[in-house]
Length: 255
Image 1 (cartoon, one colour):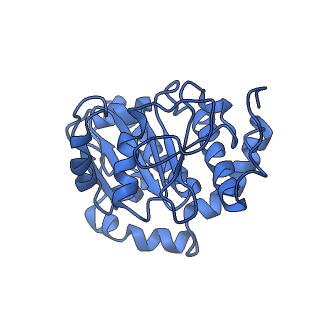
Image 2 (cartoon, helix red, strand yellow):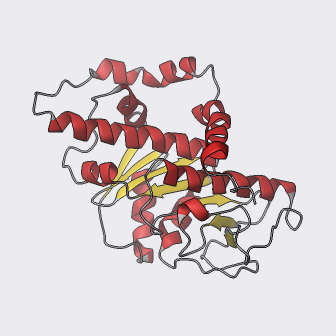
């Protein structure tokens, strides 16, 4: 934590602090896995409580530097609602606010510009059923056409329409988006999304004829995933181990 950061642990509710710690961890994990794009994407999480307040990254801070205390609290219009020395990217929350406003279950929204994700988003056929990971994504995937940098308020209803009730959204020529009930769920969903795109790009580069997975298998994937995770979310299952990895490689996110 830098000298300009003062710990907010005892200045916010325990529920907000927990949300801050998990969101800061998600930012650092995105950097650890190599999905960040300097400072130009965002992960947002709703603050527990009756107000529609959200946490987002301080503009200009690298993802591997973010701490629980440095996260900025904003409203649905992207305006700061608590003191912070940091600003917020005015375009950054446009996509996120649309999703948060439309989906009460989308307590965390994660957006990336990963190389593999953008590469597949630029392919006409989109994500193909080539891997076990891709089946998890394809069972809950929408597509949204590119409309330029996310500055236009008029884009919001179209983005919400294209996401629908899905957990995954491919932003054409732009990147990937996942939603979840927690930063853990959104992160693990992004792991499957990114892995699916990476596998597809590598399979295509191999030059051989691709072997798609049959539709009946895709149709049954949700029940299989529930059985494989013993009825809990993949985020709940994986998050403690991810935090242990982060503690070894880049501690300090909980400051």
